[in-house]
Image (tube, rainbow, N blue to C red; front, side, top):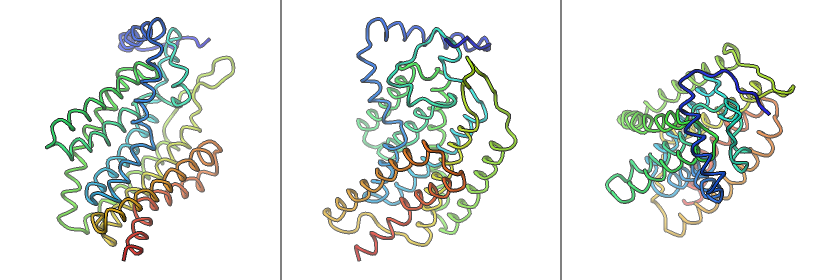
Amino acid sequence: MIECLSNPSWINPQIDCLLFLQNFRIGHLEALDKFFLSITIFGEFWLPTLICAITYWCIDFKSGIYLFSLESSNILLTHFFKMLACVYRPWILNNSLHPSELAVPFAKGYSFPSGHSAMASSIIGGVAYLVRNKKWLCATLIGLILLIGFSRLWLGVHTPQDVICGLSIGLILIFAINSLINWAEQNKNRYLYLTGIVDILALLALIYVDFFNSYRIDYVSGELLVNPQKSIYVTSVVYGYALGLINGCFLCRRFFPFNPKDGTLKNKIIRGIIGTILLLLLLKFVLEYIIMNTLSMKIAISIMFIMGLFVTLIYPVIFKKFQK
């Protein structure tokens, strides 16, 4: 049993909200857990990445850069805020809360902000922004984003503040990244400036997270509630991947521009299928051999950076040459 930690008064109404949903979930509607768990997948790491990649490889280059920039910025911001705030999961804040057992294995580390909500609002919201002239499709995507945010509350793995902040991050990035991309398109050298700025800011964030931030150390029955070193490791690894993605996008746009619309429909389908298989294999490798095994941080960051470069730079250059 986890003893309740001392919490600020403003968290209590949020706990009450989760307890209200919990009464429905445990008492009457447990079958909905699987439904909301399937919905929350749209905010996980691999599916938004796949959406960005298919757009980038097969549909529209500039739209793909926009979506990958959203994903990268989202990863950089949400993980930094998680390490900055160090907020525990709801069931640690109050022992009356019992999250869905199906969702707990995917809800490790710190809670604030909700990474699923932020990723969903960034990528799905970015797609909604790109297709904003199609009102019905845009409305459907916005509804999906809200449903993903609610799923995190229903499953009991986030508080309302986590979800609202996550959704807000995505919403802000949608317009901020669009403005930056439009600015960079006016002069291709501006992509190099953006690359340098992002790399420097990310490096400063990692230095702060690793060396200057202080972390809560709380034990229950001799077990550490959240291991800060593990969280630092995961943050550093995903930073490597995000920087690989965004550096690859900007360098490809500056030096190796391509048009995904070139070639026959058959070529595009083959390109998308091969890329999807490679991407899923790489993500499986990352989960099983990097995140779970905790390799040397330098090695892990390097591998993840190369993986990001592969998705946005190496693979497009290869299929461009084969297409010729």
